[in-house]
Image 1 (tube, rainbow, N blue to C red):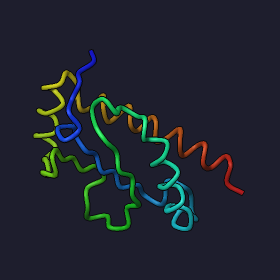
Image 2: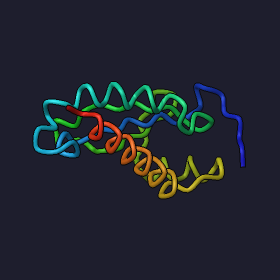
Image 3: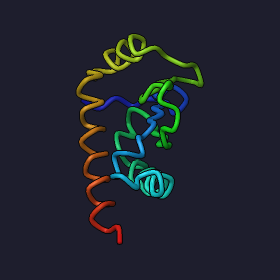
Length: 112
């Protein structure tokens, strides 16, 4: 199901990525990884939302943060929003995690 959503009404997803996902020296690579992954995410689920990938240095902050029109959404609100456009938040996040895992694997494979 394809729904056309105006850019200002798309869901924005801020994803904080743990440096440890890149191995024991991940903190040395997380900034570069996020920059590369951000470029790869420019074409991912763009009909629904936008993505911002940043390092997760502060573990007190949520891993995934949702907003629409610069208004922060709780997970429950994000769930309702996605349902309203015919999407399931668990499937949405799972697709993203699968994409992120493949990007991590690609990055680690090319790391010297």
